[in-house]
Length: 254
Length: 253
Image 1 (cartoon, chains in turn cyan, orange):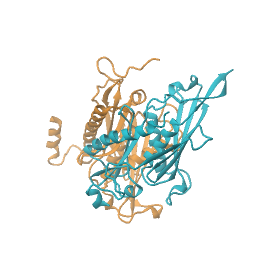
Image 2 (image 1 turned 45 degrees about the vertical axis):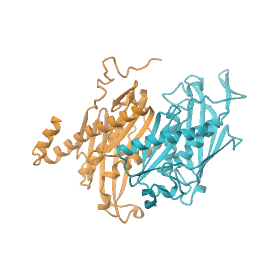
Image 3 (image 1 turned 30 degrees about the vertical axis):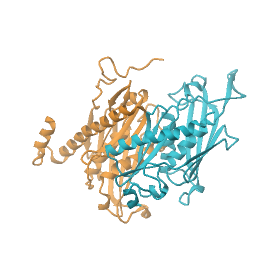
Image 4 (image 1 turned 60 degrees about the horizontal axis):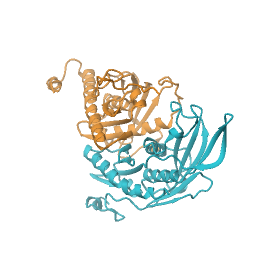
């Protein structure tokens, strides 16, 4: 593998900057308000959206609440055991959540029912069902696709009580965040790693950009380092690669 | 809605700093008797204590690695460290910070020198003021040096961010909450390696580059403070030969 990478090649025949094929299926869970199944190579993720009403977050009283979680299910790999989330899963969930939240994909200002008291609460829960590397991006694409497929129930306030009108609306989408993860193996930057490649990585970086090509979230991970040049290179690559994927996600909006 | 004024017409920030200023930093070494190495840091209003235990035997034993040392790191905030009381149980945020902190420190430590052993780094935030992970990393790396752990470099850390569309160094609590981007960075100044990088908030390409370079510049300033604290602790006023001259030269630069 090291020999191949030094020559700019990879085990699955991709070049160092290629992402794997992305397949997206939406509306696969009818009980959810929105859902998607995403396959990034052999990494598979299902995301479901549930919309409720509740109290706003402290300090963000005049905004709707968006909560993104991620869980690696025991069916996803022989190395996963059931139980409370470990450090890596918590990082995964928080990085995916940060990517969506910081891009301001959903206009949360429009999701307030009684300012300071009752707001829309949107849960996006991701289940990783097959793990083959780069779960950060796979989960992030699943969340974006699930949100795009969401029909928000319209709630109204009658006599200070929340009433579900039974009607639906499109969610207020502002931008499409796209996350691109690269790893460093020796002095090479490799985009969208498989599990096999991740087992050889020294460091990892996940970079999210929005529809205006601006950076909205970054997370460096794993125990190695990056040089300034390597980070700038990864950041540039993330912008370029994100555009292709964003076009694909845009097709979901009808 | 009233917008807090984060940068006034003279370019001064809420605490009177200009865009390139760090907050006041004070590092004290050897503050805990029982620890093998320790340091406390005051980074603006942050008050953080770090204890290093080890290299020592690993418990549970199956965690031990045959060829190198296990580095463990815990970042924890005291219940009284924040505006509203923080639940003392470790939150998901603290678990994530513990992880990225460990990953920021690890590249600097010669883990292969201590096979089958563990080094524990405990970071306790007594008072939080934005940028506590960077302050914690800076103090932890000094505490590791105080414990006599073999290291390739110190780990300096500092954040930069965007406030009112301006890139500023070392974001404080209010700027973190009201500003529009925060980028914490950890850096090994002699090896020129970036070991922690996070971002939340929106930056375009040129702002991103400016922010990253400003944060690295901040790390270099933090490094000088870390280095000075170590020299003072171990050499007092009798600087080792050559150091005095070097310090003078650094000052001139």
